[in-house]
Image (cartoon, rainbow, N blue to C red):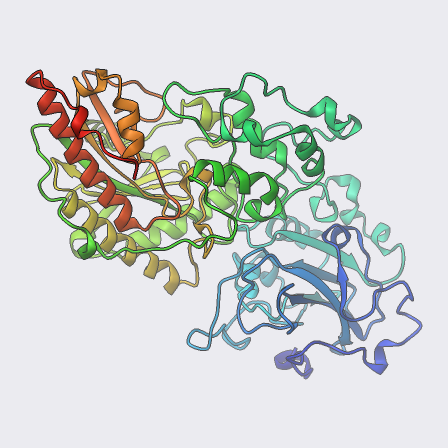
Amino acid sequence: MAGESGASPPPPRGLQRDASCGQPGVPNSLPPPGHLLPDSSLAGAEAHCSSPAIARLLLREETSAAPFPDRGLSKPGRARVGFGCAPPQPAPFLILLKPPSRLPCFSPSRPPPAPSEGLPWRAGGVVGREQPAALSSCGCLCQALRIPNRLLFSCDRGVPGARNEAALRGKLEFKAGRLLRLALQLSLQPGGLAKKPWLKPQEGNSLLSDRPVMPFSNSHNLSKMNYCAEDEYPDLSLHNNHMASVLTLELYSKLRNKKTSSGFTVDDIIQTGVDNPGHPYIKTVGCVAGDEDSYVTFCDLFDPVIEDRHGGYKPTDQHKTDLNADNLQGGDDLDPNYVLSSRVRTGRSIRGFCLPPHCSRGERRAIEKLSVEALASLEGDFSGKYYALKNMTDAEQQQLIDDHFLFDKPVSPLLLASGMARDWPDGRGIWHNDSKTFLVWINEEDHLRIISMQKGGNMKEVFSRFCSGLTQLEALFKSQNYEFMWNSHLGYILTCPSNLGTGLRAGVHVKLPNLSKHEKFGDILKRLRLQKRGTGGVDTAAVGGVFDISNADRLGFSEVELVQMVVDGVKLLIEMEKRLEKGQCITDMIPAQK
């Protein structure tokens, strides 16, 4: 590395094989520069380079002609191998990093940090005896990964040893979800791996294993691969969810050997739908994503589920966003005699981390830390306080219960079967502003659940607060070089496919004791593109004729359009309820399909 060894930085357009690399120490079996490696080869390969040579992983988008794009990857990356001259120091082992499916995006207006800006590890750099702290420095690899063009780090002989074994295992194995695959490869000589007993695979060091360590479900049971797809295919004959409508034996056979870059499998995706055949009110989705890559790796399953759930939304369709509350027409006058409360909520996922069904304890805690720091920077009407679930006093817990803010360990079988309650309540918490009208749940069903709410029927005010708070929060994350998962096709990426797009649910608790008994109630809601729930959530029944009425759509409509549907639809439902109270007919009020 230039600052420590005098070596020049990597050239901007890839590396060519240097004359110094063509030595007898470099085996003929190594792939040539620019060779495209399959994902599965990274963890099992060994790079046996001569002392003055190091292997570099060059990143390339499949749709990009340049090996080094000027921004972070916008599509799942694949790895290319090249060779170049190393610094004069020996490099007994190499750490090869496969890029995550998303890196923070950089542009000319927001360039990546320069290698000289204090990163613990720099591109192609050598970490010596005097720098063991770089290995254990919290977040060092995450910071280095923000330089999208430079993802190889070589270490000299001073680092490995008993003192640093824990640092290698604990800090490289780990960390915040930005490493989706890591291979530790020796370059001393063939068989060099066995000469380092502290790196033996049989010790359980997952750095040297291509087998994912799964946090739940049956994916950790490798014996299932001894059985054919017919033996492992779930019985979906009595199921009523979108996943069951799509997942044929042929599709399961095609997908069962695949996994995302973080190790999520099709069995993890479908388990919640297998365990929960149906639902009393709505047709559930029956599958979840474990990371951002899930929607790409398993698109053969997710695309038809999304199309079915979101009213024919095609894989070629583009999502739209509108968080300008001034574009909402009306909404400040829903009848308070019927509307008890109004709220707008959405979810957000932080790019680089696995989603709640799949995230590790360390990831979950890192998400909590990042979120709490961002929320602490909010000011004015959004100034508030964070309550970690595991640290609440009895008084704080009772107050949050009284305010109906507290979320507890999930009891819904839909959430439990997907693995979202693991390690409860570690890493979970609630933040709310001082006036208790803007809330953020951390690490429940999504990384963040943002809620604007208040008593009564002023949906306009609720939505305005929602847009303002969400915009400020996103800007705070971007200021720390983090961003929310988003793409132009699916919009904001969330755990459940039903929440893709806006992730927005605008709802009211409204009294409809007469209309709810009408034989056309369900059809009316469908025509208005609305759905009903009990006031206690997705698995609860209505009490006293009070329903939670909200938009049925998330994807393909903007935030303003969805809130407008709720405002207009609830007004019509209330007028129908008033007619039924008087014993009048509502047939002429039934709307056409929106």
